[in-house]
Length: 271
Image (cartoon, helix red, strand yellow):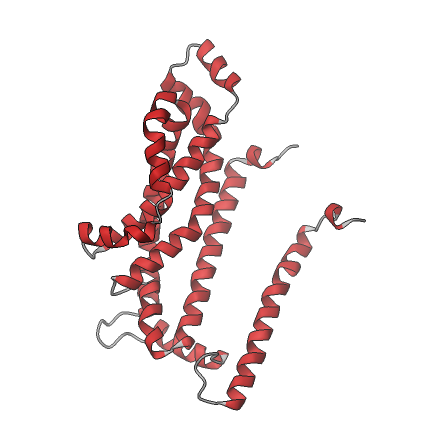
């Protein structure tokens, strides 16, 4: 049987998916052990025991200055910023994307503006945002919104615009107004695409969040990574990066589960 026709059973997917990760872990452990055998004070590839000791202090011992559990305070601050930015972007994508996709005059008027903003590198706008909005939370959230909202809007608009014209004509034949066409025809079919757009936006959203926290912040996962890098504290940096990856995977899995649960018809259920 050709590989292109070979289907993987659900029970085997977890095993196959974990093999590359386990291989990377084994390679890391071998390299770390060899470096520490040559130089016990090596900081570049810390051993698991060193990372566990450092993270234990950050997770369970209150900071002497702030009294906070640093790891959990960083996680909460970053997730709050990410959640607000992603929430605002999702709401904008839904509202503006529907209008652009279903209403040609709106698309002709505002489509070029959305496209122009979408192609600007958001990191280039970071100094402008900090100057205009200050160094507080607003600028960090604004960077996430500016970075992902225009792309999400374009994606939803293109999806709605590509809906079969027959559906819109039939709705109007039954007396539907433009508003009713948008809400009752376009909106239900845009919702699965919206969750998909959120999944695609997660990666860039984390990039913009880490960038903003690295430049101007006093708490957050990105702030902590860039704070300890000057001390070559890889025993903190690597676990923090792994934690960010785990959070992103959990978010992606949750959005996928919600999409399949709420909109099974969009995933070929029943076919």
